[in-house]
Length: 424
Figure 1 (cartoon, helix red, strand yellow):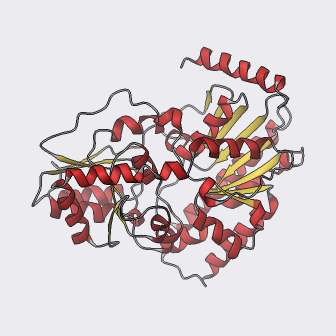
Figure 2 (cartoon, helix red, strand yellow):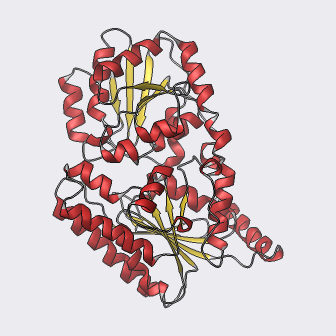
Figure 3 (spheres, one colour):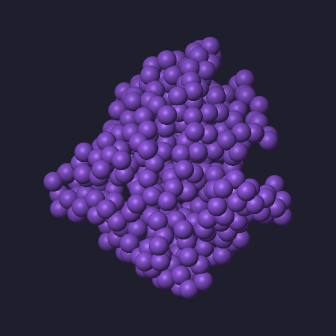
C-alpha cells in the first residue's frame, strides 16, 4: 500500500468515525524502550489504530541507519536514542533513565502543539509511565502494557533471589506504576495472575492481550520458500539471549546432525550473539547453522519462516521463561502452520497440549536432539502437530482481541469489562 493510499484510507476512516457517532479521530502516542522495526506487539497495536483512522505517534529507540524522525501512515516515528546491550546492571539502569528523560522532555515540548488523548506505554521499565506527566496533566489517559515482568526477568538474568532488595524494589515499581495509569495490559494469563495476586492490582484494571499475529502482516506470504527434500530445516527467529537457550539449540542441532541431514536458520540479534557464533564454530556447525546476525522487520517474518520444516524454541527453565513468557515466535509459527518443538514449561502448557506441539524436557539437549530426529522421520506427525495447534486460534480470536483494544482506547473511562481468558 502506498503512502498516499494509506493517507486516503485514514481520512475516509476519520469521516466514518464521525458519521457513525464514534467521534473524530484520536491522537495517540505509543511509547517504548524498544526498536519499532522488529516489535510485533507494538506494530499490531499501531496497525489496528491506524486502520480505524486514529493518529499514532511512536517514540522508540534508534538503530544504526534509521532516521531520527520518520513519517508514517497517520503519524510519525520519533527515535530518540540507541539501545544499550550488555551485562552491566548500572549501564542498564542508566540507559532506562536516559530514555525516561528524553521521553519526558519530548512529551513536554510536544504538549505545546499536540495534546494526546491516550498514551500507551510499553514496558520495560514500568516507571516509564511517569515520563508522560506533562501530557497526563493535560488530560491524556494512560495505559501500561506489560510485555515482560521486570521482577522475573531480573531474577533470571542476574540469578537473584525473590527476597533480594532489587527484586523487592522492582515489585514496588510495578505496583506504583500500575496505580498511576488508567489500565494495565499484559501478554498472557500467568502475568495477569501475578499482577493481581503479587502486586495487588485490581482485577478489573488488568486485561490480557496475547501476542497474536496481526492478520494484515501475516495474512499473505508473497514469496514462499520451497520445502527441501534433502535437508530438514529448523528455524528460530527473535532475540539471541542465553535465557532463551540459543546455546542449547546449537548443541541439540550438533547431536541431531550426526543422525539426520539437519539445517538450522537463526534470524535475529542480541547480546548473546558473540557466544552463539563462537559455539557454532566450536561445534563445527558453520555449514549447518545460518545466522542473520541482525534484526529484521516484522513484516518479513512470514517470508523468512515459511517453507521451514519445524520451528524450534529453547527457553530455559527459569522463573521468567517457565511461568511468565509465552513465546511470541511460537504463536507465529502456529499461525503459519509450522509445527514446533518446545520445552515443557508452565506457561506454554497452559495454552498448548501434547497433540499441538512436540514437547521436550527443558534444558535437556539429548531430548531436544531426539525430537529433531523423530520428527525428521515422521512427516505425518509434523502435519498433525501443525493442524492441531491451529485450533488455538479458534479459541483466541485475533479480531475479537483487536476490537477489545479499540474499545479500551475509545472508552472514556479507560476500562473495559473483564473478559474470560478464552475470549482473549
